[in-house]
Length: 287
Image (tube, rainbow, N blue to C red; front, side):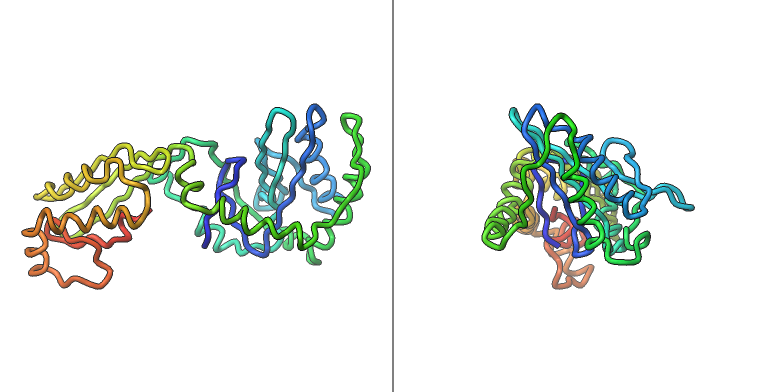
């Protein structure tokens, strides 16, 4: 799974071939996100899907099981223009979506714009025929007929392969560590694990891709290695290899802990550092 962060912010979105995206862009003062929302809603309604706007940015369909989210949106505005982009769940793998978009809120708290979580549904459940093929014509027709704020689109143009050549470069930039973490809003991360010798809670505050504050809590009878780890992580880059290096350094600082651990437990190949009479897999400290 590749991670990319969009410039509009908001909650995480799961993408596979069963999920599609739309984007509306307009200059100011004509830009109006309620117009683009209405276009999508009317396109869905034209297909027989009674969708409606809900909350800040969701489109939902009422079912016997309650409201089901089929679309989410995000927005961005500059001095002279604005854009509205969103998703449409056509036939996405909802099991994988739930696995990736179900974080423990106690363990990861972002200080950016939070997402409104909702029960979701695929349009294929509501439209047995291909939702993509059926959705495009009415949305184009409705966009052509839009006269809100006194403007009408001048033309429609299909994106051709030469234009798509810029997409890999854009994706590479927006999936890089420098963008995903180095320029991300500040956030906090909690890692907790229980070993045979005790439990550990490790709290990170992260800003601009670096750990600015670390706190450790443990009921281990020998907390010194963990306290040393917390001190080492201060100012460390929030990258797996940097955190693993800090863990490995404790073997040098606390050789007696490693010797005792080798006698007590059999180390497996996934062990990243051995401290306080137990093993710490490297993955436990990876973001």
